[in-house]
Image 1 (cartoon, rainbow, N blue to C red):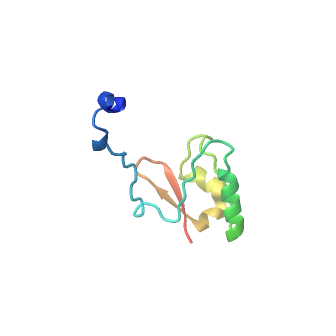
Image 2 (image 1 turned 180 degrees about the vertical axis):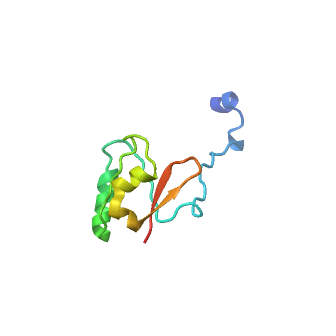
Image 3 (image 1 turned 90 degrees about the horizontal axis):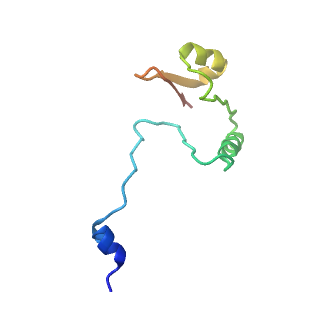
Amino acid sequence: MEDPTTSILGNQAGRSEPNFRHDFTDLLTNTILLSGPPGCGKTAAVYACAEELGYEVFEVYPGIGRRNGASLDSLIGDVGKNHLIQKSSNDEGRIFHSL
């Protein structure tokens, strides 16, 4: 007997999973993106890794107003000497950690 999903959905053998992967190696260096629901341990993982590597964590919450270079500089202060702040074309600042 024919699988009912095949007759309803069409030829399953011809379908493939969408490929959402993209090679970001030319765009990102020393960058990690953590994603997950609240309480799953993203922040704890960052602090554990930072402690293991001897780094301090500096948190900036994105929901606190619009930021420009001057406001980021006032927030970051001397921490900015260890980071590269790059201006993007849409006037948003991006911070990349540099070793």
